Image (cartoon, rainbow, N blue to C red; front, side, top):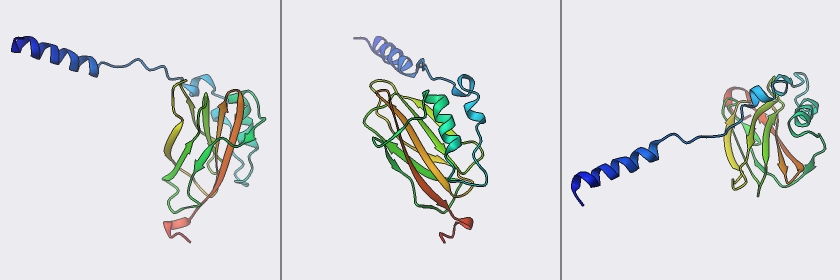
Length: 158
């Protein structure tokens, strides 16, 4: 093989790997605009009614079961601006992340492809102490898990 042909094939293969891949992501801010307007109870960060209202609009029901989801979040977050949250489950069609500390209760929604592995780690902001809640659709059943996260003032841990 001539060097010129080899370089041409190599550059052609490199160009294909850099070509944009068509991603089919849903814009839930446009599809479900009312969900993003649901506000948390500012006086009671333990009130899950707004979250359950959003769950009903996203998943079509507010009947949830505990289990299936493994949630990891700190008991105490010294900096509310970067609270690490991770969750994992065997499979799911759709996952939504909520919190009760900020004005808007919904944080994010993910559609999981059939071959996808729902194992996510994100950092979220919490204005004050509140609850982090993950809800997932697993084979038509809706599962929920939540954890209280205490946000300390000034990052002193106390």
